[in-house]
Image 1 (tube, rainbow, N blue to C red):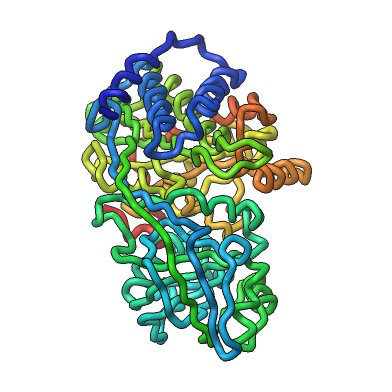
Image 2 (cartoon, rainbow, N blue to C red):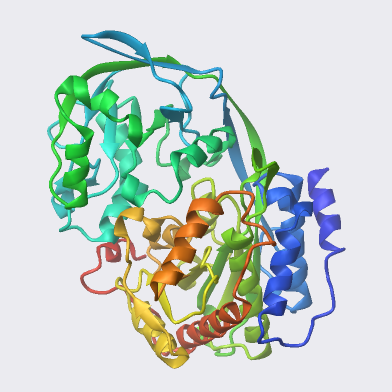
Length: 522
């Protein structure tokens, strides 16, 4: 029934194509539509998300793009959704000083992305940064007996490791390392200096469902694994019984220094109330055929995630998490890029990919990258937009991944033409390199970039910090917020030029000789 309803929606969303508009107004019109309350925050697996998928598919059809899903423009993806009842669950710490409850909400938050066990009772071990990169000389699992234990780690890493390596370890290597070590759980502690939003807002996310791909082959962890995040303000309750101060560990992390590993002298026990059920939501996929007889068989992917957080805990009386900047803005730029390229197709073919379940762990893009609707070896590159944040003029930007492949030269060339300065990752411990959908393609060997505005002045930095503190993953990321539409229009021109450069180049992109990610090349 749901498939028929979505098909019906597809037939009702086509509108006449407006004239080209360099002002950013048409870009904004897409955001004003799919970030409106009618779409109810576009949570993966909900009718609101389906309406957004239908809108994007309708735009693809209006532009004359070819269907490139498995069902028309759609590529359905199956998930298992997990709801954790934070209020009904219980946690406690016990050690030489006796037992005490660990308050869920104020002190800790149960995770939702791994399948939670019904009960947990295990000793705690601090493993420093929790890095699992033996080939880079950084293996915090080495030499430790972690079987049947809960590992605790502090986000970050030594200064001699690149942001890309630290991020890769956290996103891809960590789960399998936990499983190999026989650990039964994990507790993460964020460095307050790299937290995008305060704990008071993080705790509200506990009502959000988590998801895993139904396809077990695409999971990093294949058995129940306790997971929780600890409020950094409460971290000394873990470390003091072991004779350590959290402030001292933070000082090491802030200096990029080596981190000690030690038993915490406590156990954590608890009961976790959770339930799971299947859901489905589609990626939306279109193809623009390239003009070159040979290069037309290769594909440059332009991607952006369509989902957001849906309806959640109210903030200021508003419960709809509209996701205007995160990431209706990226979808709008993808559509504007598709419009421009459709008028003058490049030599290589282009896949326009609106992915689902980014907010649940890059799941829609992981599914597409591993189950693509074109031959896997034909995918030459991915360029991704996710909350690129046009809230001030565009004079400086970051292209995450630019230092890993020849795409960096293309990103620099397009930036120079646009009069934009290309900057390195300014905050490597925020793990932005792996926190959006380009990373799914990187893991399958595809050179990739993700693009974002970078503040060029203290005033712009204040605007960015204000957005992260007050609007990111909040209902106020809506269509009432201030946006720099001309800056977005300038970015869209940059994006089109970048895609044209990549798609028209005689040689397909290659990994740099010293890139760690070169090993994943097909």
